[in-house]
Image (cartoon, rainbow, N blue to C red; front, side):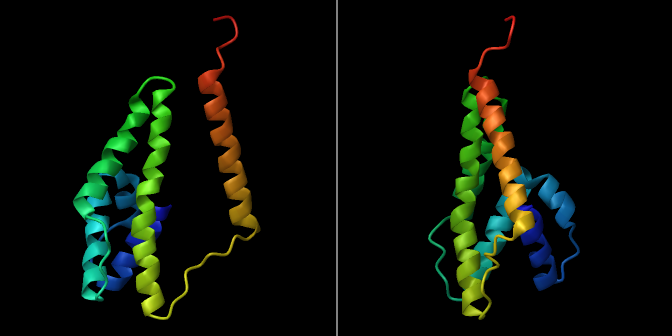
Length: 135
């Protein structure tokens, strides 16, 4: 969802013919292009992002593919979301310079989705550490 929203904004801002859906679907591959785009936009606006697109994208790629590791090591993949934080902070700073405040509301639908995701994550972690019955 994060990738989709940001690619959609890139398409609106640049007018490029690109598919936010497919770039999000293959987000791990397109992460570098998005991080590079945010970096270029920030530098054009006089911002110094404080992170390197290639380093962040390669790190994101490797943390994402750790999902293929055996139990419980696959849980490392959840750290990949932490690499999106500096990019989002840069996006928020650029928006603030344009006088746009980020949408930080946590309405009922978003709260329900966060709760559902938290429950699913808790079950996944639980299932990783609890042996199967009859095993």
